[in-house]
Image 1 (cartoon, rainbow, N blue to C red):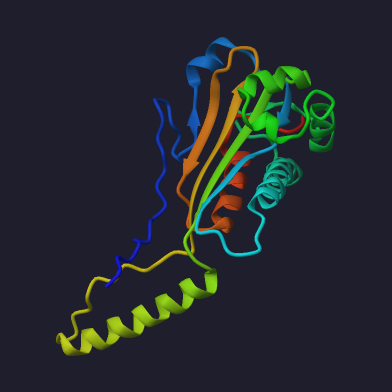
Image 2 (cartoon, rainbow, N blue to C red; image 1 turned 90 degrees about the vertical axis):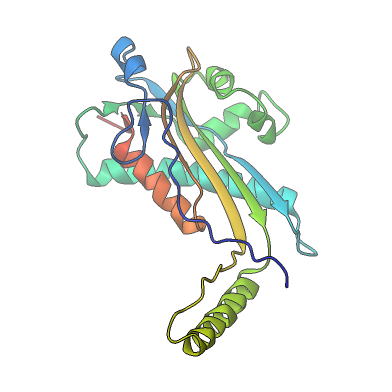
Length: 228
């Protein structure tokens, strides 16, 4: 019988020190010595890498580039949505948010394609843009099978678990359900002057919807606020 890949739960990466209750790392030492009030913030094109079993007729190179810009604009929109609905929270600093279209247009005057920015230190890319702060996103996705295949496999495991439970006097066996994809996701706020990470959130999400939730959490729990 083939080994079944375990279903991984959400795990928060608590980095260094001074982490808030939300799981968002805050570099308090940096903020105590540097003023980011009124600084310019740019959301960079996201680093996106796909691996694993590639379905036939799928062009992952193109999909990575599309996902990169989707994530970039999603993070920008999360910042704007939070500003439009909430007032600035304590310990959030107002910043000037560069439009992502402007970010990409400027980068394309300095490099052949936006993927080049993925390979560069984010503070260097930020200085190219004239930004004081950047948000850098990285998403790695390992593909195992189609979502429909994973769903039907898990339905079968559930039925099997129920049958074995009846045989075993009502005690269900431990079942390891399968996943279509495994994600690693990290979003960071970085100073372009020093390269310091000011805020960071890292997660092994269950699916793409979890990633959207992380982006909204960064907008609400990080130290920047896109407007006065």
